[in-house]
Length: 189
Image 1 (cartoon, rainbow, N blue to C red):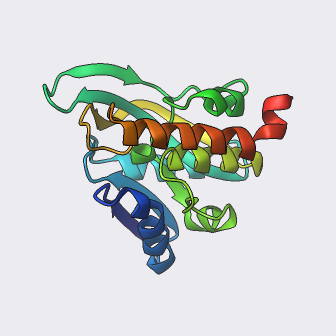
Image 2 (cartoon, rainbow, N blue to C red; image 1 turned 90 degrees about the horizontal axis):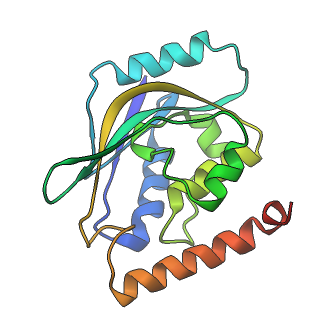
């Protein structure tokens, strides 16, 4: 069975808490996230991801991602297609800035989610990237399907990762300070 969890960005400080609670209540073997403002564009997304896990030559798979398309929320115009580049030092890539892995595209075994502690409820921005970093630090493998299977809408100022208000800037600064402190040893390497 599969549990689909839809998270809401209505209450910024409660996104991580609400998602973690939903995952704890889930009965399925896998977790697939879909942001309330995003959409899957492939009816076979989950089927393809499960097949990818089953047929992968890698062991200890922690997540399967797909490609996604950034869409401007206001104009509905396509901004960019993003294909997960999981080769090389992926941790180094997403340590500085993610942008290559989207939570809306992830399929993760529920046991993996639990083993890395789910979303960090003490941060209000960058919870997805933080989760993916901890996944890699725990030595889980990530695989990807290089097909666009989701739309990620960006540009609305009331979203967690966007906005030019002083509150949004302060949230961003706190997030960056947390990242520098949490992953200090990796940054030093």
